Length: 272
Length: 364
Image (cartoon, rainbow over all chains, first blue to last red; front, side, top):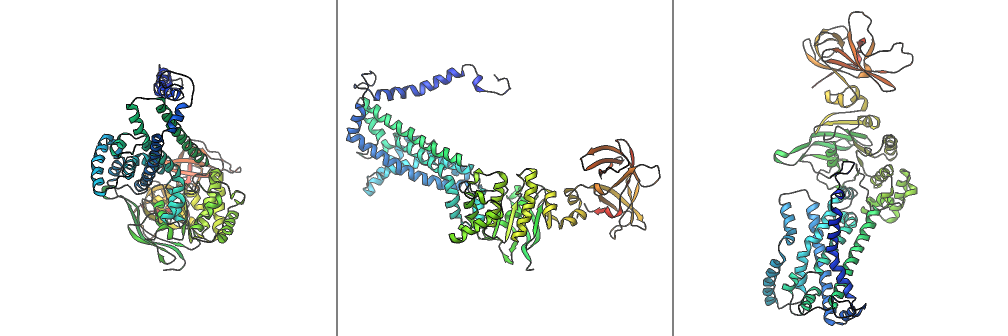
């Protein structure tokens, strides 16, 4: 169907509004229910027994929750940081060079972790790291950081590359023309303009690392629960609204991160 | 090597791509550009003028040949070591910096002390009349203002040569005219050698000391605006710069004034003498529309006659499209003057005269 001006507009499709409403409903209703029951006074996740912050208090009092949360945070920051640094270098190498043979193979290689099933990566890393652990005797957080950094690279790479591609490369030429060595051109022109992309890449990598379950489950040593694996373990033993409370804090964190990113990017966009 | 050449381009060739897809953007160009000269590279898009500019700036390196700046070979020198600055077509101002920071960027990269950068930036701001906007972010500027900042930024480090890559193409007509005057003023005040790239022949004629006309990667002609307009080297130059009528003629003999020329349809007229042409030779004769004289046909025999097929009035002048014979027509441009005693209409018979001094013989 077409509107009067003859342009195709999806809003004029019959039933569009209904389908849209249902989709949002299906996506967000369960999350809304989860958040609501985090504030339940009783110990049921389905029977409302009055408003209370009891379960937030319970979760915060549990040492294992705090321990797992700190580990998750440290892991997400380190892995996200390593992934962002690697992805930035990769993005520059794949956008600021003349096209050459093997460039698309390189794209595929960088983005491979998106395609390989997580379970395969998990099993492979389990076997590989168990050998490394035997040889080195080291069983710290390094394995998890390395594993997370690896699968976070494509997530960090995509926004950084998108930003680089949308940036006018005549700016770098102008810097070179004005006596800036390649390093200084990067430092004074490319990087300041690339910054929102780098931040977006880091945020994405951070969030992806934060809620990973499959690979973490395979790679972690004993006593190295992250928040998601801890929650998985608890849910197996029956759930209390404490899980809802932790999830709600998780959600709040993500919303906050996205909002900050949006504000930073919006400010940038306005300044340009 | 003559000391008064700022830039010498010696047999430079630039090829993009390789194998079957290879494109020769600059084909064996040799060119000398004098110190303090306003030199223009003129040609249609894709003629190689911008490629040549990029080779001089150092953004590209030639496949063969040499580029010499003030007697020093810089063919393989990276752009950040060449004392040459560029005004980019897109201006390429740094969007995260203010006007003053943009202008001072080159000086900062040259590691000059702040005490030297600040007065130099102030001087540049004055030169382009932007003092009031020094701390403005460049994104808040109009097109004309951005243009001035781009100029100031490129001139601030006192380059030996300033390259300008179609810098006026994004401006509207009135602003473009103003900036043309402005550029001439800046060049006179700074004494820097300007190499200006444009596809606009009028702009080239107005501003340049000398013009190089390029097409298909080759240099066709180098000369002053008058020389290029009045004595084009070939058919391409004649038609690219200004308007031109081309007449395919055969030399039939010599007269007291010069050569007697005949059109394919038999009409004859007289052209200038030439050592290279003798009876029987076929050649293209060129004449500018404004040099053709036109009068209502008088009925006298002799000379060229034709029929007006089309009239275009453009205010100052009027164009008449006159058909002489089948397949042979002339465009005539006459200035509109109130004292002209005749009016011409489409379909009128007219007699044409082609002044011998205005006719040129062309190759190709």
